[in-house]
Image 1 (cartoon, rainbow, N blue to C red):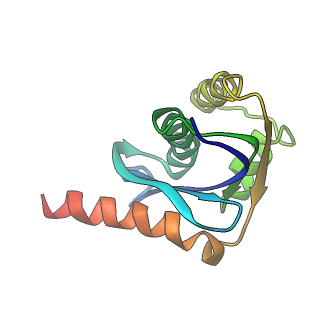
Image 2 (image 1 turned 180 degrees about the horizontal axis):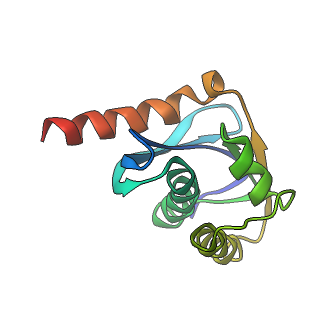
Length: 142
């Protein structure tokens, strides 16, 4: 099981329409920026906020599936609202989003290292965003 000092995890979720067809994108990089895992998949019809949370949950599942561990997990999201909610700075009023946050908290407990959630501009999250769009484009063609 590879154990890294730090992993950088870029997450994005998006819906075409709100709600509409949605997908998640995840890119996991080591400290030098090398991509060690990635994922893009459709998640059905939902909203942008739900898709953003589902992207973080998908990232934790991908870490488990790849047996990746690190002393520090740096999550990068372009959704300021979701990042602030994950960091505990904003309260969540909607019950369905609180349920997704609870799923994230359960997943966090499986990792012994430090977990940091940061908001970045969309242009710096282009790889995860691209995976969202590729997944949605493939679904549209099917």
